[in-house]
Length: 321
Image (cartoon, rainbow, N blue to C red):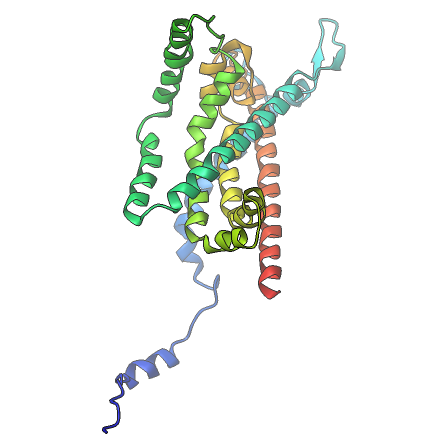
């Protein structure tokens, strides 16, 4: 009986020696000039506009009504929390703080509703056949092909008194509902616009999830709720966190949906900023509100970064155990 033939792979000695002699650079040790294009773009398109807005917030309204003028003043910042009567007396005014809180609440509600829609959708897509999965992901991105303004106008047509929804309610013999304009319509518009940003990151996590773990949990007697909360959701945490960041931050400063779907019944921080720059022509006050929104956004980003760090630490601890 002859000995089995072993498959031998020839070794390229020259390539191996070249690879061994290669000097590898540590991450971040590249030349400064390689980062120059990115730095220039960041300064021109990010740093300079932000600095200008901050400077505008400490200036006064121009006499002609457009733009800003000197001298430097903190009146715009005081106007955020104080109001002044004709006698010059100042008193606390919570109006703009309430608008800020309403904007945070609305962005948080949009994020929660987007999670509730995106998790089952992303999991369902991830469990389909590869070819069907690709088509479904493409279907999720189709709304991006249409302008946000047009999609918002579509919801105005659907939700108004003569729209498709109220026409169906009238056909059933019931009274039409005051759907538009309203906070309800604004919430629908925000969720509709931003839910794809939640679905795609969660789908990325779901595509990597080992669903045999859920089957094993079922075999061990776990209920569906325990499988979802103890097995599935922890595996999707990174996608949920990334999607929440992509939804909460833009929803916080959105103005198209509140302006068109909320009308005069709903003031959010984005609509107030737009009104100050366009209608009131009070650029310093609009800039002050913009900087306040920027600070609020930075706090939200820090919160998401802290949550991501904790999730990463928990994942490393679980892997060690």
